[in-house]
Length: 455
Image (cartoon, rainbow, N blue to C red; front, side):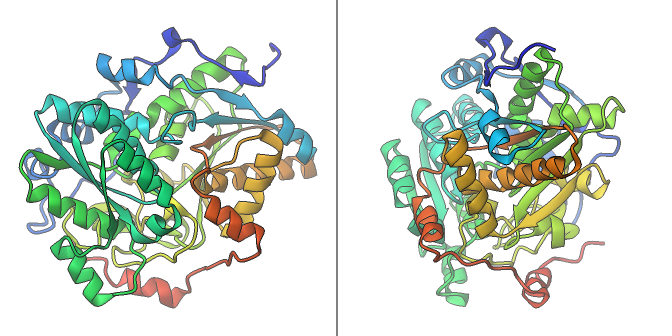
């Protein structure tokens, strides 16, 4: 085996020219969308009033394994891709583990995260379809920042509904989005009918991604030449993020490394789906026996404590019904620092794979997450986003197990972004002000009660 450098870089010529569609290799496809009124299977025409036509086409494509990345999108990618795959030698030494630890770093762009991979594709499609504006939601702000960058590049107006508690925790995220020309509205707000209804029922709520989605969709439906786009959960977003896993596989194959364990943080599921996609294909097709681990916050445990059922993706109950692991669209997460991992549901691809036993899921408390984040920052020199730190926690736990058993395993995890806009969270941890919150069964039942009955 060749000596493995600290950073493995690919050339521009090695960058994938196609996104990989994992659904084409899944033995059993996930259940289709259901129309919220007729309860019939959604067809493309049902989705056109809200979503871009090209994204609907990608969303409903379950057969084509490779979908070409448009030339304009590939040219934009070259500003920050290929991203580095890093061998975490310093972390390995600090843990005194025989494990080999690798991480794919997606934070080397101004948005600070992987979200730009999908944002540029969606903004490009909007420009091609002649739209003049887009609406979206954002949790911790990574998606809103990425989309504001992409919309500025393609000269498209953008309105971002940002979860209110995150807007308070991360005011400089708002400043960056506004620098790129976006309008940012803390959600729930009094600017929409659904926002006013939510505030009337819960005037002190810190909001949720479900609330923000409802507001963004309402604006899209009532505005001319405008559509709603989102940065996670749906299949087309997982498709765009597959460039992460493809680059990982190309880089590791150069050195003859097949990961024994692949770990990703799990909120809506797009980064996790993109990271595991080509490796999961090998497992599905019997070419490997890689373990896959999704790490989610204990405060919003959709995979580990949710129900696998049809549910709305938004609090206002306007989206199609999606078969997924869910805590119920009425679930309101605590105001912790899990950021973009506070969505009540999970990608239908990830949900189906988990339901069929292809990967494991664990839930971790935020104080343990920040302990892992600080260890990583002090050894590897990068301050990770709280979301990414969930994957770091999972990787450290597995590396410690290797130390205890003496097994030398290869561990790959996704470092989805940087935490330089999350300093209030780090300050809370460093001053011992951070608290752990784990919802009780009674708390979860309130959210479960909002899950519709679909026969």
